[in-house]
Image (cartoon, rainbow, N blue to C red; front, side, top):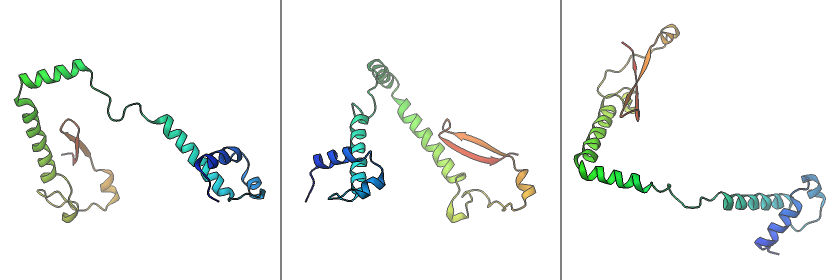
Length: 145
């Protein structure tokens, strides 16, 4: 016998509140675990329907802000390109000079390979400072001088 979705929902809603040992003693056409799975699926579907956003995607930008941004772009055409070149330069510097590379034993490509620090006393004296690039989008960590 094959149950329809409505039948499964009805049985699951009816029997889900019963303890598992009571479900096991009932003579049913399906196993108690199946009834509990149907109930979990029913709850998931209900939750998915109620939590679905009204509109998919990001909320729309306020019209006045959109008009202002488009006006600024028209009046300053070299901004989008200048900033893009700056961002690419910063990322390139980070990638080539600072980012650890697996093939170089976690050393940065343009720096010397650091001596491994295994002495616990020396580790506790390390002074590491964070340096932000691209207004905090990229973080670099260095030994303080």
